[in-house]
Image (cartoon, rainbow, N blue to C red; front, side, top):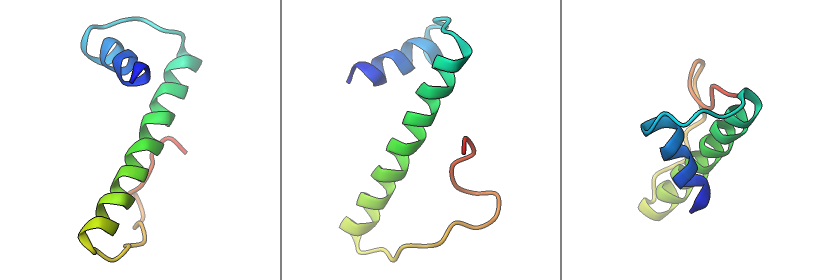
Amino acid sequence: MAQLERLHRVLLEGERIAPPALKGLLNREARAKERYEQARRRLLGIAEEPPTTGEGNPFR
């Protein structure tokens, strides 16, 4: 939860952090979103779709 609070402070309140810390924060959030989407698709019974060109995690 602390990670989400920090993301909100950075994106919504304008808190400044070092560029490497920002990159790490964004990477962690991107991975968390991928895990959430996979779990959501499993729960709903939606087949896994391979990512198309230009989609997926832009931070990799």
